[in-house]
Image (cartoon, rainbow, N blue to C red):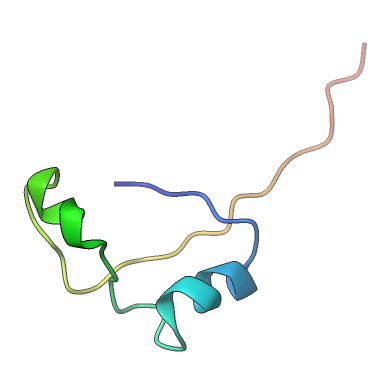
Length: 52
C-alpha cells in the first residue's frame, strides 16, 4: 500500500516518533492481506515543468 503525505510532520502527527513502525486503522485488517510491522518512507520530488 502507498499513501502520500504533505510532510514528515504530518506523518509524525499520525504515527508518532517511530516513523518506521507501521500504524493501522482498526478496519485495515478487512482490506489488507498482511499487516506489516514496519514501513518504509520515500521522498517524492516534483521536477521542473517541461519547457514548451
